[in-house]
Image (tube, rainbow, N blue to C red):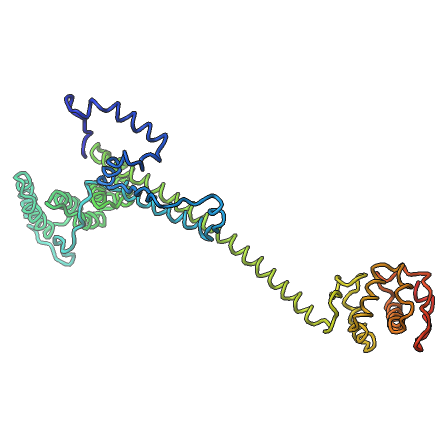
Amino acid sequence: MVGKMHLPDNHPLKNNIDAVREFLNALKKEPQYIMSEELKFVREYLRELGLSIPEPPAAGAKEQTPEAQKEEPAPVEEEEESEESESEEEENEDEQSDEDPEIVQADTEPFPECHDPAREGKDDDFDKAMEFKSKASELIEKGDIDGAISSLTDALKLAPSALTYAKRGEYLLKSSPPRPNACIHDCTTALDMNPDSAKSMKIRGKAYRLLGKWEEAAKDLRKACQIDFDENTEQVRKVVETHMAKIEKRRQKERIRARRHSEREKKKRIKEIKKARAKAEQEQRQREAAEMPQGMPQGMPAGGGMPGGMDNAFLQAIMSDPELAAGMQNPKIMAALQSVMSNPAKAAELLQGDPEVAAFYQKLMSKVGGMGGMGGMGGMGGMGAPPQAGGAPPMPDNDLD
């Protein structure tokens, strides 16, 4: 790991540290001035370091007024885009924080040979294997790692053991370049032979660490330190645990984002359901209005909009009578009827002298009486019958009560 760097005592930068600190503190308070022409050299330096600093707007560019900004509709998916952008920034930060100078390039097969399980052992296999192991130790002391690996391979072919596989895995990590995948292969074989081999767990955990496979490394190193603690392995485990903490933090953020996304989708579905329901209700009202008898005069809407509260059943009854239906097509009759409904006290005045209106009104009143009356036609008691003209029959007093 790279140690902390310090400025030499006679370095010119050291004499200006306080001024730089004062400059940065002032810029933090008013960060907009980083875009000033006087600080252009600062922006250029920051860009050289890889930071993204936008150029200031052109002199001719016009800023939007608050009124113009208000007129522009907010994007429908503004919140989602904001969260996606935030997620991308966090991922970039996580990638940078996961960088480790000790991570190596992953090696590929072929790996060193393993023993043949079908081979029948001989009496002198163990002694020969010990000779190969001793030779491997001598070679490793001389720095001949490849030779030591080859000698252990010969030993494993004669007398395979978990410890010998773990030892070869350890040498594979020391080779140049390191071979972590080959090491993992050997240590996994060793653990198949002896699941409690702490040495195999330690070496495999270190190999995973060199590949940046933090979860696998943590699993091996934690268990190995519980079985057989040593300071060197503990130091590696601590490095791995710092990365595991970052992974858990990242997963927590992902869970929060997933929950927020689920909540947004739920609200969106509810909104769509309400919208569809409102549309269906509107279409139903339009269908009901379309099913009403045609030819209703303007100003006499169906249902609750009729003066006096004429309901649909009453209107249907009126329109089924040819004479009444024809009368409701007559603007003069409808104007008189509306006046009567809005002000029953003027009924006698409006109906006097017009036999056509009087005849229609009489028949309408008989229809009202036959249906048990109409709410808006009351309050006309005492109105005398209109003059009999044009052969119109007299209106009985009891129909006006």
